Amino acid sequence: MESQASNRTDVEMIAGILAGETQLYHELIRPHERSVYLMALSYMKNEADAEDVAQEAFVRAFRNLASFRAESKFSTWLISITLNEARSRLRRQSVIRMESLDEPLDENKTISPALLRDWREIPSETVEREEVRKLIQQAVEELPDIYRQVFLLRDVEELDINETARVLSLGIPSVKVRLHRARLMLQKRLAPQLKGTNPASKRRWLPW
Amino acid sequence: MVIDCKHVWNYISEYLDGTLLDETRETVQKHLDHCEICSAILDSTRNVIILVADDRVFELPVGFSERLHARIDLELMYKGS
Image (cartoon, rainbow over all chains, first blue to last red; front, top):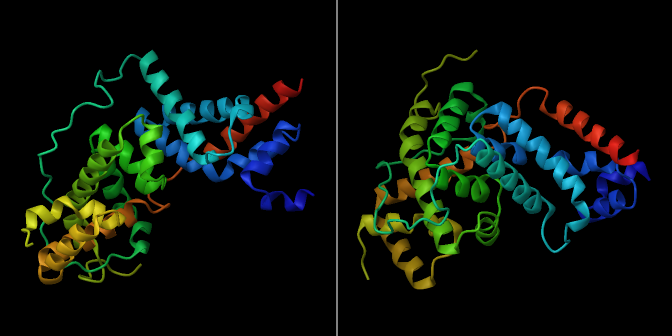
């Protein structure tokens, strides 16, 4: 039986845990560690608090597992718990900014992208380079909070537009506008910088 | 209908998600077919999104998993007792 554990679906594992096989919880959450931490980090802005929030979220999810409904995805449910945990901690620290989540957006403001005449595809392996990771991390950190949260949920955690709207208690049009702006801001910031690091266009680095 | 570059930029995100209405999509596509700047913007935006979303960009702190599972073990023991 144990050897088949990894083939069990989330729903089957949850049923097992609720029936008393609690050790299965370790396995259930393993694929979600990174995404929970990342969302916690996007709210808390420092690693120690983000780790606390992530641990708390996983413990809370365990305690509330009986209330999980199979019609939602376990990953999305977990992210909702994480965001609630992060928000309540920020409130306790009373550093939360008093901006309404659904603040009116200036719909007419256009974000201009970086203008390029040609683009040569930058391969994924480029992120193995420390300085490229740093560039990307910094660009994401510097996005305004309301754009970063939507971007991370949609493009990094791969929630769909409806799930993103639900998790953030936002309307779908707000999600779309924020996502659009986040993407263009990242293009504006990163495209010129990444272009310069692309070994395909210019060999600036000696092979190790 | 012909639209200028600035209008095309407003549609980039939805173009990438494939959620534009057929008519709008065709108009944007026509522009992209002959505008190398807007094509480069589209390609670079798609490329940047893929790079940012790469699993290797944001890493867990060293020891994160061990500490998390130790904490979960405590919770499981507490529940079992």
